[in-house]
Every structure is written in C-alpha cells, then in structure tokens.
Length: 338
Image (cartoon, rainbow, N blue to C red; front, side):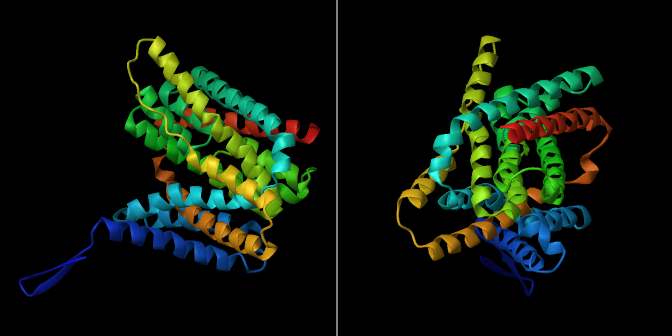
C-alpha cells in the first residue's frame, strides 16, 4: 500500500496484490454467507454453492460488478476452483474410473458432437451469428467458459463475442443447475446416476459441483469425473480445431492450455483410494473443498448480466438453449438406460 499526503489530504493506493486479496476475500465472504444460509430450513436444501451463485447474480444485476477487485475474483473463479476440484479427488474411488471411465469418455464425446451440431444447425436456420453460436456450442459441449477461452484465439474470435458467450454460458448453466437441484428428488435415478447425468450435461465444472453436491460427496466425485472426462476432451478437440483452421489457410498457431488440475484430481483420487487416510481427515478436506467451490461460484455468478442479452444475440442464445435441452435429455436417457 502506498500512502501519499497532498494538500493536507491523505490518500491510499493499493497495489495489484491488494486487488487480488480483496477480490478473494469478497468471494469468500459471500461463500460464508451462502454456507450460513444453507444451514437454514427450506432454503438450505439447495446447498451453499447454488445459494452463493444466486447471491452473486443478484449482486451483479443490482449493484454491479466490483471492477476494482476483478483480478481477485477472477483468480478465485479460475485457480481456487481448480484447487478445490483437486481436493475433491480424495473422495473418488479409482475403481469407479476403471469400470466407468472409458464409457464416460464416450458419452462425453457424444455430448460435444450433439451440442455443437445442434447449436450450429439451429443458428443457421434462424440466421444467427455464426461465430458466436460456434463459441456457445463449444462451451455447451465441453466445459463452458474454459472451452470458450481456449477456442476463441484459435478461431480468432471477436473479444466482444467471447465475453458475451461466457456470460450466456454462465446464465444458462446457472438456470440448469438450479433446475437440476430442484427436480433431483423426483427423478428415477440413483444418486450416482444423477451425478453422472449432471457431469455429462451441465456446462461448467462449477455447475456440476453445485448440482451434484446435494447427492453427497461420493456421488459428487463421480459427477466431477464425468465432467472432467469432457474437460479432458478439450485438448484433442482444440488441437483438431487448430489443425482444421490451418488446413483452411489460417496461420494462427495459438497453443492450447493443458488442464493440469485434471492430473491433480487423478492424483488425489489415487491417494484417497489406495492410501490409509483417516476418515476424519478426508471429511475435513471435503468441507474445505465445498467452501472453496462455493467461493468459485461467486465469480461465476458475477458474470451473469441480464442487460447484455439484447436482440443481437437472441438467436444464438435460443440455439444454445435448445442444444442444452437436447444434451440434457439425451444424456438423461443414456444414463438411465445404462
């Protein structure tokens, strides 16, 4: 912090570190509020993560985005989120991966194909914006904002389209997450099947974590595995997309970031499965992970701005919404049958 005295007035200016710290503390405070409200009757049934998202969405659309601490909020929604996912790996039994991992990869691939194809076809029929629709299809099929961020430079996408598509993904994904949590008790699915369905169909990792958390920690870990199979597919998809663009004559050689937290999730899963770790330690780790994930929800919810949904993007939004419904329905049927 720098302190300056000018004209008998004391002014304080914080450096970049303070922006990070204040932003992180902001998300943690809302997460704390969400956790507190989750212990109350009725409202507590939807869990601290979804409550945190709702608080953040209301804050953004009533008060606005706290720009001064954006860096810290972004850090929470990106890096702390991934750290929390790594911690959740301790609750995953690797025997489940051995029996279901390959199948989940296959189902995840189907999700990607359906999401992109349906979004683009409907957008074409409605005369929507091609690039924006493609970004939304990629985000719907793979892993939300992270997939959009990885694909945008390869496509040389307009920054405004990229920002809008991220906001739409956050909005629609949040709505689906809340709906999933509400209908969960009435579905003909086991808790594990429900979590897998969430992992195969919801947009963001954070959305899957929020929707699957009411099913319990074991089911949540399996749901995250299903989602992380889709995240893993981001790598071959982006390399294939880059190759396709180069074949068409684009010289963009942007590198695709590797989701290293996927390896961390697998590592903690192995440790939790095969090493004799006391249950109370695993329980404490689970509580910390849930709290950190709720903080990450805040960063996600703050990206939802209702006023940005204007006429220009309505057709792309409609295309992506229809694709999301079809992905959800087909994933549900596959999960229920299999």
